[in-house]
Image (cartoon, rainbow, N blue to C red):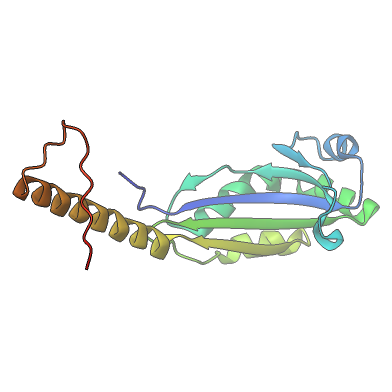
Length: 175
């Protein structure tokens, strides 16, 4: 099984709030979102907002700043309209980054320019890290054990003259 060593990083700019009109947000900012998030029944109320989102998609890169700054290049031309809309509506603007680690880790830093632009927009920043490296290493180890077990079983079957094409034989040891 070929697995990716590179981390996957995605970033998004989110305007969020309680039940706002996302079409008005789109008109005010002058750009279509990549997705819209709506509240889900039964979710925690403090995180259950309507969301207007610009997302980079998942990228195989080694730098958090490279992904976030590419998102900023998409958002920054709309900054004045975003600032105005956020002030008029009292909604929240946020940048979020999601890092998925399979084996190798990225560089976790943001450039001064990226942070300055986030601050100028009055936005916060959050990062979620999903590290699967240890779990995948254990799974690989488990697969190696299964292969070794299968090889030992094949040797055992050969030693006792078991033919895999014949009817199955059940050997029971009673001690």
